[in-house]
Image (cartoon, rainbow, N blue to C red; front, side, top):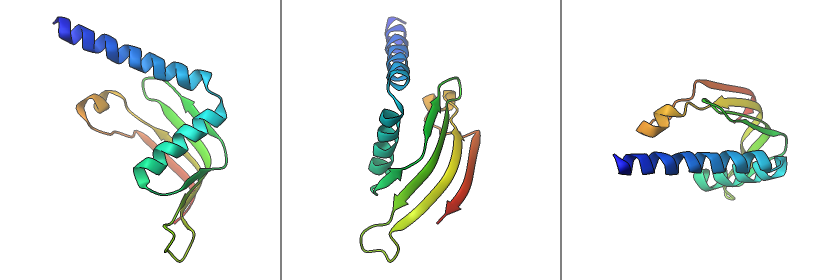
Length: 112
């Protein structure tokens, strides 16, 4: 019981720290973090030229514009994916069960 309480406390502190970092960081910090996370996940160069907003809650909302994912250097076209605007909502509770649930995915102006 004590171990479970310690783990939950640590998890709550981690979430509070991340929320504080997002809240205190400006738009450039958010853009850099999102771009870097995508680059690591996709192993491609990523540009976020527009806006990036994060609304923290029970289901955090990520809203961005001007996203470009580049092709590898050997490809014919320099751009793999371009997204003019997007909104993505993530359900947090399923993440505890290692499931990714996206209740909202709205993409506009997608070029592949």
